[in-house]
Length: 283
Image (tube, rainbow, N blue to C red; front, side, top):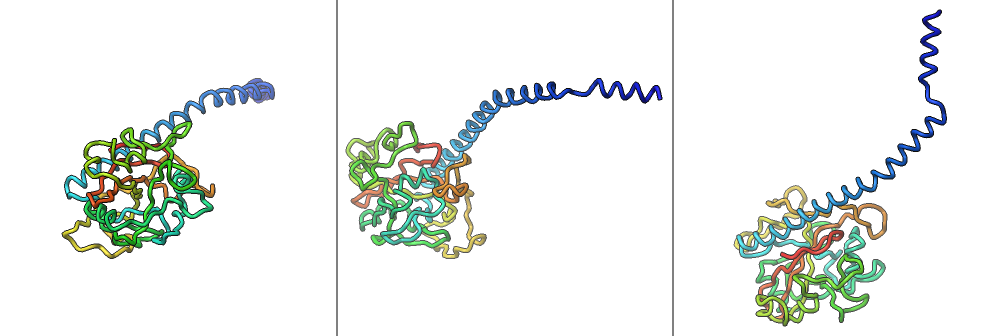
């Protein structure tokens, strides 16, 4: 009995009082409040580094692909649900992208139908067809194809495409605005040789056929799992983005490639890429 009593006393003496427990909980809460913001900031920075690496890889592969095969890959996505001139933007776009393409309740004001010379500009760059909608629907490049054009300050409402800075500024590639790229008067010398044009936006989506080349037969088998992608490069930003309907993570958060498409048929050129969360990267 004596042994049991001593054990009971030891247990009783080692118990925390309610006040002590509250103090411990308060200290844990204070430590969490101090440490959590730092951990979250480190996580955001790490995700940002991953995105920068992914996007840099996207630019590098696009450039290397062009250097090796003398053309850009085919099957990039237009970001539209159809090839109609009143097509809606893809469902599941991040709000940052959809803002660039117009209000979510309105038809995209930046849709433009290519003319013959602009179509020839893309074809000369090896971009022989583009895709649209949620599957692998494709359209051969021609003067009947609708694409998304980056808006300028003189474009249709709601105004020019902006970057993600605070406050937002006009989007620039290599220090030149979209409007300057269109004019082709003060841009790099390789661009001035081509003259005026438009800036067309294409998405680096899984619709790309990295193994297609002009001398080969076009891969018309758009069944997922059977098409050969070759290079596994359909990048999305790892940072959680706001969906257009705020229902969850956006399903169409792919990197975007911007091409200068010339009005005289000169071969189109890549001028940069953007991420819906992390901004612009020059090639």
